[in-house]
Every structure is written in C-alpha cells, then in structure tokens.
Image (cartoon, rainbow, N blue to C red; front, top):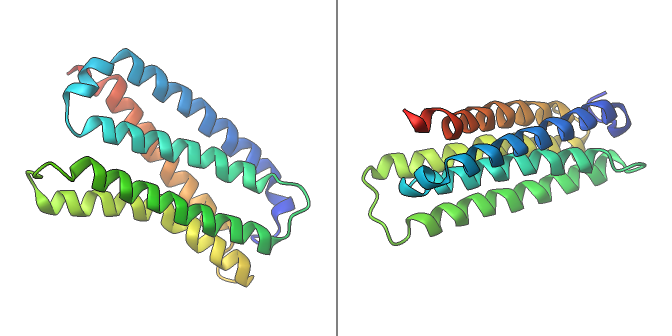
Length: 165
C-alpha cells in the first residue's frame, strides 16, 4: 500500500487543500503584520521558509496526483524535489546571514539544519524507499507532511498573534 500512488489519491487531495489553506492564512498573517515582521531581522527569512514549506506541501500533493505514474517515477520526482528544496533552504539561510555576524553561532547552525532536515528528510527517504520498493515508501511523505503542517501552523500563529505581544 505504501508503494502504490493510486491508493494515495485522497491523501494527495487533502494535502493540497491543507497546504493551500495554510498558505492563505500565512499571507494574511504576514500582510497584517508586515511592518513588525520586517523590523525583526530573523522574521522575514522565517516567513519565507514557512511559505516554502507550505508550497512544497502543495507540490508534493500534485506530484502524488499525477495519473498513471509508477512508484519509481514518483520516487524519482520526490527525491529531485527534496534536493531542490534542501538547496533552496540552504542558499536562503546562507544569503540571509552572509553579511551579518550571528549573535548565537550555534543557533544559526542548528536551527537551519533542523529546518532543512525536518522539511526535506522524510521527502528524500520517502522517495528513495519508493524507488527501492521497501522501507516505508509514501508513509515517509505522510511524516513530512505532518511535520510541515504543524511547523507552518505554528509559524503562522507567531506571525498573526505572538508578534503583537
């Protein structure tokens, strides 16, 4: 079951809907509080990462919904997309902190690595195991989707409510 994309159609539809709805919430939260977000050095990058995570959920859902593709084709797509996503996160973080001396070098190192790993790790593992036909397959994608939705929702709450405290 974890290796047959046809059986994951409903999950793909649900994930696309959740990703799109949360993306809308994030846009509202950022729009309402844009001045405060831009005033904090780390928040624009965090908002961009949150948006990237949510859009990636929609992309994964769309890849899952492509009709008639084999589990190997989907696995290759997931691995390639996961690598692109990891690169985007890494380049964004390096660019954001290139000219700035971080106040906490350990936090600057571990926080981005955690975001990159949590956001792309399950996707990469899911794609690899889907290609191999063993090791969990699309169940890894579920783990990544859950982590992405929870993390993005938490960040949306910060941008909508906590920033006002």
